[in-house]
Amino acid sequence: MLKDRLSPADVGAREKEMQDALAACPRILDLVARGPLADPDAEAVVYLRSPLDPHPVIVSNDQLMGCTKAAETFFRSHGVGKDDPVAVLLPICPATIAAIWGAAACGIAEPVNLLFTREAIIAQLNAVKAKLLLAPPPGLPGGLYEKIEGLQNDVPSLQRIVVVPLDGTISFDGEVLKPDPAWRDDYGRSRDAAEADRVAVMLPTGGTTGHPKVARLTHRAMVASSVSSRMALDYRKGDRAMISLPLFHVGGLFVGVGACLSAGVTIIIPGPAGARDPALVKNFWNIIEKHRLTHAGNVPTTLGALADIEVGDCDISRLRVTPTGASICPPEIERRYLARWGGPCVQQVYGMTELAGAITHDVVGVKPRPESVGMQNPLVELAILAGDGLHTGPWPSPVGELLTRGPQVFPGYVDNKQTEDAFFQGWLRTGDICRIDADGFVYIMGRAKDVIIRGGHNIDPRAIEDAALQFPGVALAAAVGRPDAYAGEVPMLFVSAQPGVDIDAQALSAFVLDNIPEPPARPRAVAVIAEMPVTPVGKIFKPKLREIAACEAARELLAAEGLAKEVSVEAITDPSRGLYLRVSASPDKAVTAERVLKKFPVKIEMNLDA
Image (cartoon, rainbow, N blue to C red; front, side, top):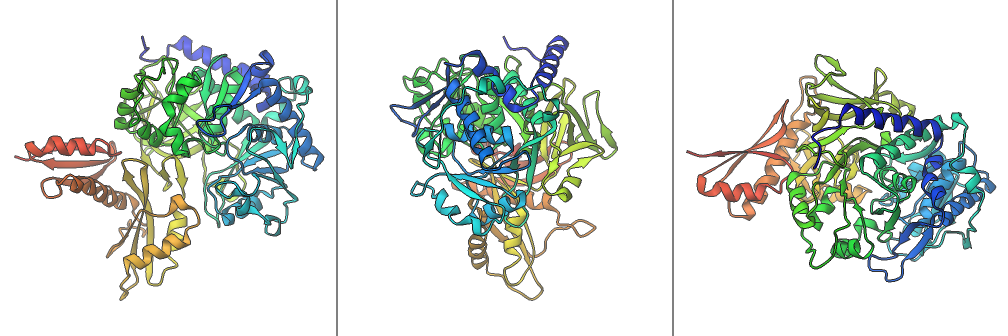
């Protein structure tokens, strides 16, 4: 039976476990090596070169950690020191894991977003002054190598592009790395406390070409994140967990790989494309059965797709935990997925790149609360910044911006100017509007930031706005998230014209699509409005635009059911409730309208017409 909350004894035990791990593991590899040291011959990774691979590549703990040590030696031989970044532009595969951990051991690993354009990659590598770049060989689907071929001419710091195959071998430039047994004497046994505060991984948090935003993560933050997820998601020795998120994402790298390896869990990689491969979704339940999975986390959009896949006669009884994160999981998607799986609940994970992972979790064994993202992790401190000041407890809290501090907090961005805006009196600003209930459960009410989250992919609206402002006659431009039943939200662009100018919306849309380098950032809808809503000080008032976008999206769904004239929709932003839709319909139309809008990721208030 699930508990309603953690007891004080549970909280104390979790905090002690975290303190012990931080003291014993100054480096992320000291934590990661714990599982492999306990059982070197056990399977570390089962790598499917495609979701239905009949003969997957098996990599033991000893092989993976030995190749990680060999990768570290390779990087050192090419002059990589503690301040030198190694950029890793690789899909999910065993070599990617070894490369990231090996680079973090001797220098700084910088996993790069695979969706970046060439221009965005150049901006990122120049921002961090990358020394090496690892990429797949030419001729593979997706064209990653072709995207970066000859990049040295544009990145002065880059000394070499290292080609890494995706066939399951751990090879650099055609040479298979030989596992180095010295890992057993090094990893897991460091006592250099100074390493804890060294930046060893840098991750991109935005995809714009002109303003790269790169978070610097310390060993301490990565250890704290991985331990938190290991405890909350109940990873145990002998478990088997699917990792389908990319490793340039903290969810894949720390909530997934770091937590799993440290606990002695076998990682199942269902193909280099992960959850972006339609074949994975189509065959998901078969993979669960065949590989006897206990954990299978996915972003909410993927859970929604999986809810439409029949389980059939697949034996999925071993599946114990389904974590989800990157964006809030809509209740209707969770309901549909649970109806298909038959499991007790989905475990919500909440965090951000700047935290090396999550700061709140739904804890396995504790009953999740509807619309909550769980409770704070061990040693994490939370605060709410509201109009009347900073609230640090006791709870419940008012509604305000969520702030945090603790071992998981990053020291800042590569660009110090960006760091200044990230903190308030020593607390990291999450940019999310939240409330905390009397038992410490956290609820996300909205975002103070403008970031748009499309299927778990963070989009900086400035890329869209900058492109629109280059179109002749555009005076103001603002991009917001338009609610979407599948992706959570998609970008929508609003523009207003300069005086006396008529803007052709179709021509503007085509122009913007051609001038945005990151495909997910291309807006789904473009609207030319007579007057841009602004605040008293002249700042664009995006909450009003989000209301317009939500209304438009909801009306489209209703129109598809023939309810455009029978049902009225009004979007309202309330300080305590966030954005919601007030829907009015006659009693005979209300049931259908409510059914249609249940899949919509915005709260609704249904009113019956007299």
